[in-house]
Length: 573
Image (cartoon, rainbow, N blue to C red; front, side, top):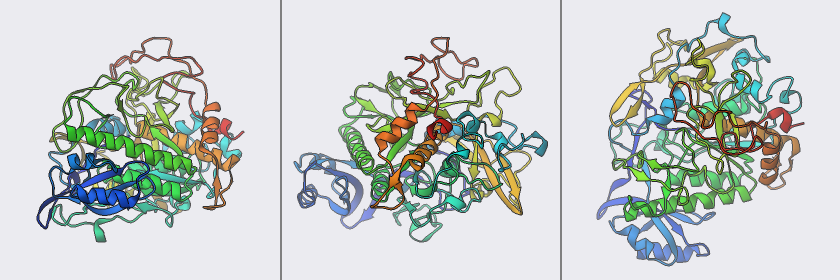
């Protein structure tokens, strides 16, 4: 999952998040998300919003909510009393956040603590396929996405559309460009939507990045794992001929607001998207609790709104043929037995300690109905791919597992903390240049440094630079090593895309192919490789990199691996 990475003064237009207070006639106004009661007409909802003191900016008719502004400080309470409204919650925009952000664990885990980022040519294994870095893709070998495996039977199709709900996609990266669908891609976020917030000039008119731009790198990494082309350069994706659609819902800094994520999901449902990758959780709450006593009435209302509206959007997308796949999270937590949350809210007011109850608190969208949750595994060690040290798990939550990397695998050997234990995928040149990880020619710096940092409550430290450059026939491209359940989910998405390509039928409404998400999920799970719990229970990570983890269940289904590790080759046989 994606959280904060800051590039201090580097990528133009990058900004942090804040409460959306803007100057308006008559006083300070704030944006809100207002959810309509089910069965309420738009006219009735509009009247109720007006009666509560709000002004409608836009309406999403598919799931029944509006973006609203109001200068009334009691707007949430007033909206809650309207029978036509389910509730309201403060919305967020690009603005300004205190310190350097408060959520280091996601990016810290994903960037990792590896060394040896730059590989000499003689260190690179022989290519598995024609792509020059494919010998480094232990992840594709693990799931059978190889020339002898799924590539020989099914490589995907542009008739199968995969939506990337992330920080954007570099559609010009040489490994993504052959499969990038610019016409269908959309950006549901802005860099700075309020001219009264002084965050400096925006990069582009209207503060909206082009649909083929990624100023972070996370979304591009995800997209490459799913659909990097077989084109003699870099790496290959699980489905190297699939259609990649950027449905941007995350900010440059990695925060995901409620409104963009819901708009992105409804867009996917309305435009023939077959599978979506959701490697995020919806800010500002790691767990959304409807009535946690540690939260104020407004905070409780906000979390109820997040749960209700997210579930509506996911149900809408799935009912329109979208298979929903999400990362399970990077906090080494049994989601079936969470205990505390000390990170929320992750911007605005200071975070506070909350007791978390699995019965009433949900991580969204991962724990929502109809979502396939993916845990992460590392490279095989003596034939066993263990659950990654950081990966969340849970017998109630985990549906399947997939390669996400584990830099702390192989404890006590020279491979420990090696970059090659993570997942290699495309990296935007503009981000590497902004972070000064490459020189003017795009060549990675030999000292492996970066001016981009991981931040936590004003404390920052350098981000490692696991960047690899590859050139073929005069074309060069960059790749980076990352780890996380964010990297695991796209492997499952790629396999799901192959399933749709193999077994789908013509989509008469949107063109291309379609397959009922129930069937896609059944095939994905049935063809996954059963993986038993470790013999040691609870499992103790040898370097104390994570707390002991209890794996509940059987070899056929358990909390570490769910139905098993996804397998591209078996899925298309």
